[in-house]
Image (cartoon, rainbow, N blue to C red; front, side, top):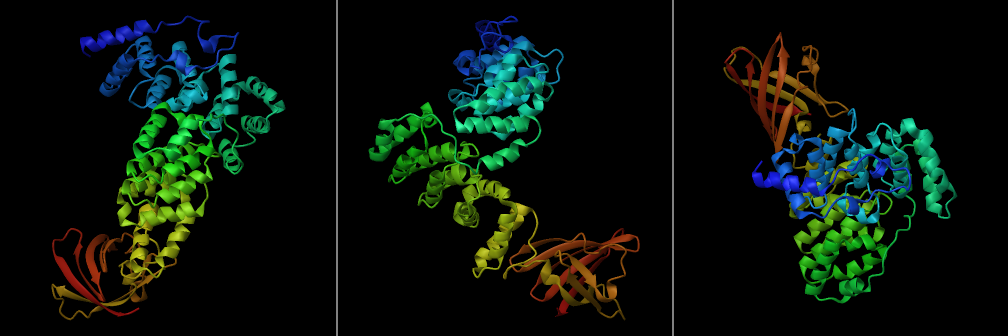
Amino acid sequence: MSVQVLAAVLFCALQVPTPVDGERAWQQLEPYRPPDFEAYFPDDPAGAEVLDAHFDANTLRDLEPELFLSTVRAGLRRTRNHRTILLSQVGNLLIWGQEPQHADAIELCYHAADFSPGAARYGTRHYAVYFGLSVVKQKTPAILRTLAELCIEIDDPNDLGRVAWGAADQMDQLLPLIEPYLASDTPWVRAKAAALGRIFRGELGAFEWAAERCKEPPRPRPWDELPEVRRGLRQGTSAERLALLERIAAEELTQRMNESYIADFAVAATDPDPAVRRQVAKRVGNTWIWRAGWHRIHAGAVDLMLEMSRDPDPDVRHEAVYYGLSTYRGERDDVLLRLVDLALDPGAARSHGRILWSLERYGERLRTHLESELRGADEQRAQSAYALYAEVFDERPTFTPPGLASPADLVGTWVVSFVAPRLSGKAPLHISLEQDAQGKLVLAGDFANDFDADPLGALVWAALGEVLHFQFETPLEGALVYSSGHLEGGRLEGTSRIEGFDELFVWSAQRQGR
């Protein structure tokens, strides 16, 4: 570490005095001090530079605990690195499984667990709970109250399940903290408190609850009326809209908006400048789909992303997929069908990896749809669906559309002749192949019982258009016979070599029938 960096580290350490027992919020009995990200973590560009320098050099773990914590604290707000990774290091090094657990590390995680709307943009809550508060061995009343109030406000099942796990041995202290919410005047608060009681007692899984909750109307959320934003989105010039969208992103104004603003963004989505439309796709997809929470994904936002995924500009289409359709977690069939269309579209190659990632969650619904595509009248689309099926499920479908080679093309009876070396007096071999219900090739006829092991079980193949290339290993009298070949039309050509021998047998085969 350079002298300049060391000096900066020491400066940051001096700027963040270490509290003593009783001054820390998580240890204080009265009055209760909730987590406060804004007050605890300074807005310190220099501190962020020091933290990032250590992160990049992988030297954070080398610091003494007090200096390590003061460096993280000073730079966490403005760091350009993942705050989640930093918090996992704090928790793993100084809290989880440690004896004793470091009081200031707990304090840092306590304030990083701030679940207020203003702290959401820092993205620290879940990891601060996961690696920090949930693994504090003896949770203080302040920690338990924070966890109880966090679970009332936050619907992420990752948080709810982690709190239930981490506070299992103090449930007699945690459960009473949610009882007052059962008498709330607000229906969603009463329902949430009742569900939490069941989750905490082990009667209901957090993800099971979330799956049902997402089918219900979203809870009311605070929002502001921003007339200048609505006016700018609807009536501004391209330059004015672009400047406004940049301001919305910088100031995170979408945190103050409800779903009624989607209609204003939809007007801006018709702007002639693709740069404006790209920003609209980012803001709407990110706010009302990707980071909306399981039960807050808004149908109007999904509709807009579907529309923008057909935009004439490829970058706009990509943003609509990346921030919107690929992160959708509902059950709408039109989203699945559109993702498949895009996955089969060569013009959407830039988004292909993202689309594959999103399609994995559709499981059997996707499998059923692709199997129908394989049998469609459009031969090129059917072939593309075949390739997509193999990419997503890491296996070949049992049905192969016309125009593609597959192991199914090997089914039938073949008359095999040796080309070299010529075997005098040796009649051509008649080999029959069948395909079982799982699509696997098996020997039939005279050779079916001649092998102790499956001679085609190790078949490896690749199709290049209508030409099938393949190789396999055949166990024969204690040795292996290595074979490779290709199928083109109704003719097979290949070579075989017996393990331990250099001689190569060249053979060809003609299909006799299926």
